[in-house]
Amino acid sequence: MQSQEKPTKFGIISSILAILLSVIWCVYIVILMIYTQREVTSIDVISALASVVFFYGGLLVMAVLNFLMTITGMVLSVLSLRKGEPKRFFAIVGFVINFLWLLPYCIGCFTFFLPLDS
Image 1: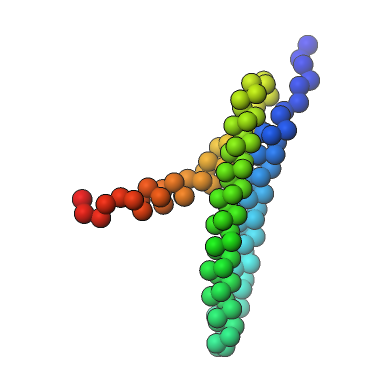
Image 2: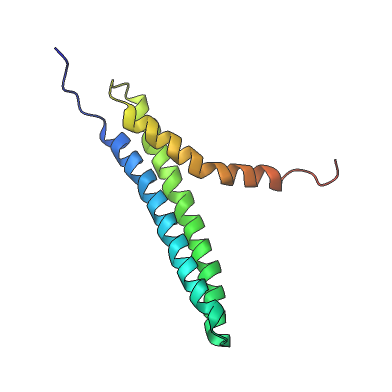
Protein backbone atom coordinates (compact mmCIF):
# COMPACT_ATOMS: atom_id res chain seq x y z
CA MET A 1 0.00 0.00 0.00
CA GLN A 2 1.35 3.42 -0.95
CA SER A 3 1.61 6.16 1.62
CA GLN A 4 -0.34 9.34 0.96
CA GLU A 5 2.41 11.80 1.83
CA LYS A 6 2.04 15.38 0.73
CA PRO A 7 4.86 17.36 -0.87
CA THR A 8 6.52 19.94 1.37
CA LYS A 9 5.00 23.41 1.50
CA PHE A 10 8.36 25.08 0.86
CA GLY A 11 8.81 23.03 -2.31
CA ILE A 12 5.38 23.97 -3.60
CA ILE A 13 5.94 27.66 -2.80
CA SER A 14 9.34 27.53 -4.53
CA SER A 15 7.81 26.06 -7.68
CA ILE A 16 4.99 28.61 -7.63
CA LEU A 17 7.53 31.45 -7.31
CA ALA A 18 9.50 30.12 -10.28
CA ILE A 19 6.40 29.79 -12.45
CA LEU A 20 5.11 33.19 -11.32
CA LEU A 21 8.44 34.77 -12.22
CA SER A 22 8.26 33.22 -15.69
CA VAL A 23 4.74 34.58 -16.19
CA ILE A 24 5.74 38.05 -14.94
CA TRP A 25 8.61 38.21 -17.43
CA CYS A 26 6.35 37.10 -20.29
CA VAL A 27 3.76 39.74 -19.42
CA TYR A 28 6.44 42.45 -19.14
CA ILE A 29 7.89 41.54 -22.55
CA VAL A 30 4.45 41.53 -24.20
CA ILE A 31 3.53 44.89 -22.65
CA LEU A 32 6.89 46.32 -23.70
CA MET A 33 6.46 45.07 -27.27
CA ILE A 34 2.96 46.53 -27.52
CA TYR A 35 4.04 49.85 -26.01
CA THR A 36 7.13 50.27 -28.20
CA GLN A 37 5.22 49.30 -31.34
CA ARG A 38 2.66 51.99 -30.59
CA GLU A 39 5.37 54.58 -29.91
CA VAL A 40 7.27 53.90 -33.13
CA THR A 41 4.40 55.22 -35.21
CA SER A 42 3.97 58.49 -33.32
CA ILE A 43 6.46 61.34 -33.36
CA ASP A 44 6.16 62.95 -29.96
CA VAL A 45 9.06 63.84 -27.68
CA ILE A 46 7.15 63.33 -24.44
CA SER A 47 5.83 59.93 -25.42
CA ALA A 48 9.30 58.90 -26.63
CA LEU A 49 10.75 59.96 -23.28
CA ALA A 50 8.02 58.03 -21.47
CA SER A 51 8.86 55.00 -23.58
CA VAL A 52 12.53 55.20 -22.62
CA VAL A 53 11.70 55.68 -18.94
CA PHE A 54 9.26 52.77 -19.05
CA PHE A 55 11.83 50.54 -20.74
CA TYR A 56 14.77 51.24 -18.42
CA GLY A 57 12.70 51.69 -15.27
CA GLY A 58 10.74 48.52 -15.93
CA LEU A 59 13.91 46.64 -16.73
CA LEU A 60 15.50 47.77 -13.46
CA VAL A 61 12.41 46.84 -11.43
CA MET A 62 12.21 43.46 -13.17
CA ALA A 63 15.90 42.78 -12.55
CA VAL A 64 15.59 43.49 -8.83
CA LEU A 65 12.32 41.54 -8.58
CA ASN A 66 13.85 38.66 -10.51
CA PHE A 67 16.89 38.50 -8.25
CA LEU A 68 14.91 38.67 -5.00
CA MET A 69 12.27 36.12 -6.06
CA THR A 70 14.95 33.77 -7.39
CA ILE A 71 16.99 33.86 -4.20
CA THR A 72 13.83 33.36 -2.14
CA GLY A 73 12.77 30.41 -4.29
CA MET A 74 16.20 28.79 -4.07
CA VAL A 75 16.32 29.18 -0.28
CA LEU A 76 12.85 27.64 0.03
CA SER A 77 13.90 24.77 -2.24
CA VAL A 78 17.01 24.07 -0.20
CA LEU A 79 15.01 24.16 3.03
CA SER A 80 12.53 21.72 1.54
CA LEU A 81 15.28 19.39 0.30
CA ARG A 82 17.03 19.46 3.68
CA LYS A 83 13.95 18.12 5.43
CA GLY A 84 14.60 14.76 3.80
CA GLU A 85 10.99 13.93 3.07
CA PRO A 86 10.34 11.50 0.23
CA LYS A 87 8.12 13.84 -1.84
CA ARG A 88 10.73 16.25 -3.21
CA PHE A 89 9.54 16.73 -6.78
CA PHE A 90 8.33 20.31 -6.35
CA ALA A 91 11.46 21.28 -4.43
CA ILE A 92 13.71 19.95 -7.19
CA VAL A 93 11.65 21.57 -9.96
CA GLY A 94 11.61 24.88 -8.10
CA PHE A 95 15.36 24.73 -7.51
CA VAL A 96 16.13 23.98 -11.17
CA ILE A 97 13.88 26.72 -12.57
CA ASN A 98 15.12 29.27 -10.03
CA PHE A 99 18.72 28.31 -10.83
CA LEU A 100 18.04 28.89 -14.52
CA TRP A 101 16.65 32.35 -13.68
CA LEU A 102 19.75 33.10 -11.57
CA LEU A 103 22.24 31.87 -14.18
CA PRO A 104 22.36 35.14 -16.23
CA TYR A 105 23.32 37.05 -13.08
CA CYS A 106 26.12 34.57 -12.35
CA ILE A 107 27.42 34.78 -15.92
CA GLY A 108 27.20 38.57 -15.85
CA CYS A 109 29.16 38.80 -12.60
CA PHE A 110 31.74 36.32 -13.89
CA THR A 111 32.31 38.20 -17.15
CA PHE A 112 32.32 41.59 -15.37
CA PHE A 113 35.30 40.61 -13.22
CA LEU A 114 37.35 39.01 -16.03
CA PRO A 115 40.49 40.96 -16.93
CA LEU A 116 40.32 42.74 -20.27
CA ASP A 117 43.89 41.94 -21.33
CA SER A 118 44.31 38.21 -21.79
